[in-house]
Length: 334
Image (cartoon, rainbow, N blue to C red; front, side, top):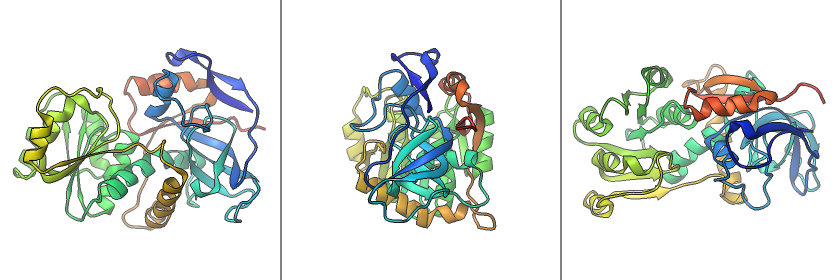
């Protein structure tokens, strides 16, 4: 089968499409013929040699995929049959023509959704759902600050905050991105390049601050985050785009607000946790992707690239040009 590959860590130019062995499903695993996968920041980090896959996971890039069931390993519980349209959360291997997946990581694709749309859901939406509900325990009426609001996770989080009847506030780096977040349901958005988001957030919340922060930026934002965090607020760090170093009196500032910091990574979670997450998402959120529901949830697609143009897709994401998800389409044959 064909797969996205790189021989040594480095820039997007190191990526190419290679013929590799097709995987075989093991105990309790399903073989999926991949129609589409989507890019995530983790793919960029892995390509640079900074985020190796967990032990036992495929070293092929790709943390999510959509396609159809092509085979069942021994011990499958009969939840899926050959030909079922499915989307999956992966620890790796999505940017290839076939991938094996534990059956509990699979979700049915809503009937009115294409494989390309579905490929934009698993990693971003499960990450956002996990951060808001499993980690942050978001409550009705709470104010939630979402950094990188126009990213895949950001766009999902905006809609999930609305679904939880809470208030999404975002930051983004361009007016175009802020407009997209407003269309997705953000109550208000601030340009972190031209405005002090902490001052703006405090003004918007009439001095109360936000109850929950979803932060993939890290180090450089710590002071502004604490400034606009409410008393007893929760600050969840799930990425370090600006690095992890903090200079200043973080602990005293946290203590004065009785605030808490949580950190979260999804890829390295154990199988039971991921299966519980997928099950909760399938039951509580997935129905809202179907037509006729209110609110209607929608993945936001930025662009679609064929597998052969994987390097260009990486380049676009590296330059922060995308609004929503970049999807990789697999070859139609084989």
